[in-house]
Every structure is written in C-alpha cells, then in structure tokens.
Image (cartoon, rainbow, N blue to C red):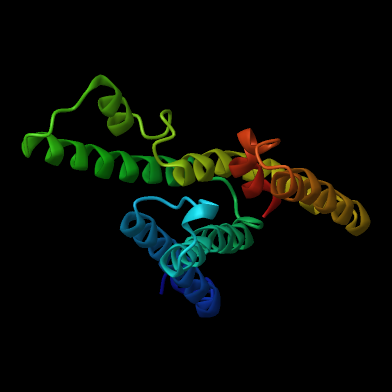
Length: 190
C-alpha cells in the first residue's frame, strides 16, 4: 500500500460546484439574450416587453459572474499559488482563441492586424475580460490570503465595507466614476 492511498481525500462540495454550474449557465443566458437583441441597450423611448425581458436576462450575466468569483474565492482562500495552474488556463484560452481565429481564416474571413492581436494575445488585449481579471487576480491570491488571515475580524469588516463603497456602491451611484478598474476591483471585493 502506498503513502498516497493513505492520504485523506478532499471531500467534494457538490453544493458549491452546482452553484458554479448555475453561475456559468446564467452567463450563457446573458450572452444569448445580448446576441438575440443585438446588444443590451436601454433607450427610454424604446421600452417594450422585449427590451425589458432582455434587460432582466442581461442581469443574469453580472449575477452569474459574481457568483462564480465568490465560489472560486471560497476555494482559493486556503489554497496555495501554483504557476502551472495559471499557465494551463492561459494555454487553454490561447488554444481556443487561436483555433477560432484559424477557423475564421479558413472560412475566408480576413483577419486584420487588430483581430490578429485580439486572437493571439487574449490576455494582453483584454479580449476576454473575465479571463484577464481572473488570471491577474490569481497572482494576487497568496498575498490576499495572508492579508485576510492576518487581519482581526473588525479590521477585515472595515476593509470589506471600504471596498464595497469604492468598488461597488460608487460605481452604481456614479456610473463611470470608478468604472476604469471596477471589474478587477470586484474580483478583489468578492
């Protein structure tokens, strides 16, 4: 019998994994609604049942993203940083981005310099904002974990309130005021 078989196995947390799947489904619903409507714009002069339905479905995207980040954060708070995990995720995104670019090229769709950049540099180009925020956030996780575990409960609560005010509330009440860093900041807050 090897030492590996004696090691305790991590128990799966099916409820959180199910929540992560639901969150991904919510994001898919958002993208579907956005594509079907031609974009999620909301002009007061064009208020219809369909525009309201699309807006409601669009809210699924933000909720799904936030749920996904919360669940990932829950699992990452006690984990250690592994460069190979970040590199593997980067390689997967790069592979599929490049594959789609090659398929478009093979189908006769010309690629400009900009689309080549978006296709072959998905992290640097911010082509996939969630991926870029997640990878960037992942590199900060070891430091954030040390901070979280070293703070007293009251200080941690004050930090959360401060981050909520600056990264969520201000962006909601004063749209655009803190929007330039709101996506990555939300990862840190969540």
